Length: 397
Image 1 (cartoon, helix red, strand yellow):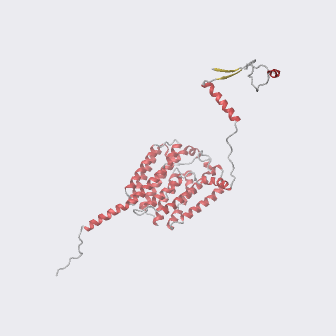
Image 2 (tube, helix red, strand yellow):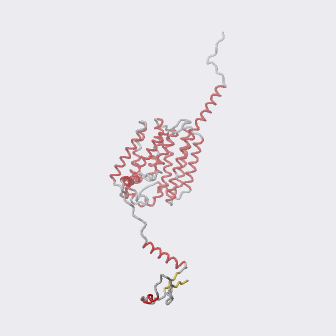
Image 3 (cartoon, rainbow, N blue to C red):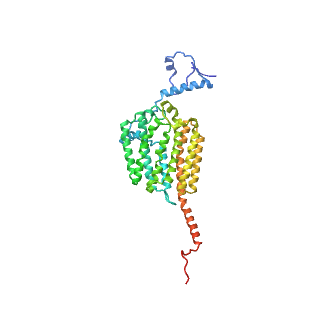
């Protein structure tokens, strides 16, 4: 403990300078009464230092001007337009593109598988389906929020959504949904009439999916049927029909994949779902989630292998299928179903699964041409090694 004493010394002669007042005048000034010595005690121990620092910080914050200002209201017409559009962008999840990716990849797989040997996938079709995935995923989110706005208001993770928080009225959301579906139809009519009919038939799944969580513990199955419709539609858009030998196993593989990643996603909200009464595969599987997801992963790998066999795929395709299987196994066995952050991380990583398989399909299709040339050369050599004989023996006269 140290003490710093400030003492007033009386009777000392002042420093003389040309600026100092004459002594006679100084003696004529009234003298202040004597004051007791001022003592400033500073405690430098850790126990004493912290309260003093807190007190000093509190005083400085109280006296200093506030640096935090309220957000300014939009002034220009552009700022007003952006502020008005922000809730609608949040409604269609523009800030969370993972859903658009997961909807697009089955379409891209099918388009790439339908490409001719040695050819790249149709870039125009990929662009159309990418645009359609963005629009229809947003429409699906709007439909989902219209059904679930009362449920979303009771769930911690979803209570800030525009409809649940009251930023957008139900009527405005319906008008916005009509605009989204009109844009989706505009994209769909760019395809052949078979694809138009096939694409329109998926709308029933899109509309009924949000209701399934109130009825069954398998809403993820219905979501998988809707999200992977592009596995059928992509082939039909490029070929004019659906090849069941290739598209059916691809579609079922996508459904299994959706059940895997959306069950992981559903584990984030399982406590709120239990209180509200909403059903999901996360609640159905419970502590056996990893075993169930392993089974669906095995079914997915088998379906992808069957689709590759039907399309005469080559080594890069099967290598990508193996990498996809390893990726999903790592997801499942490192998953902590009681940690929402870990569930969200595993769910987001499924974008990589779709990309890996797409690259494998493209490389495998490009490699088909080399193998086809080799097969043609071998068949030519085989036929040239034999001498052709006449059908009927000639009669020698």
